Length: 69
Image (cartoon, rainbow, N blue to C red; front, side):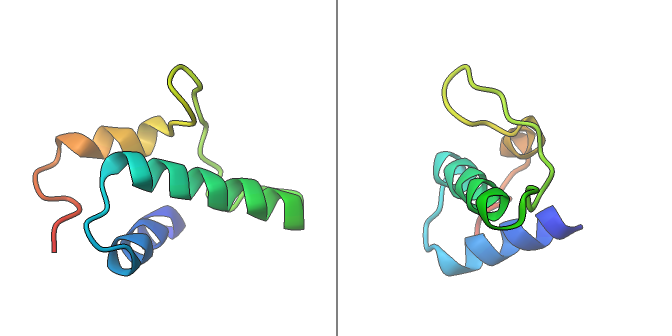
C-alpha cells in the first residue's frame, strides 16, 4: 500500500516519467530514508544486474498505461 502511494505520488510530480526514472527515484528514496532512519521506506528487494531494480515495480511495465495520465 505504501509503495503504491509512493509510485502514484512520484508519477503525479514528475511529468512524463518512465520506468527507468521511476525505479531510480524509488531506489534513491529508499537509500536516503535508510541513511536518516536506519531502515528502508519501501522494504523492496533490489537486484543489481543493470542498476538498482525492484522486481515488484519493474513487473508493472507489462500493464498498459500504468504511468499514463
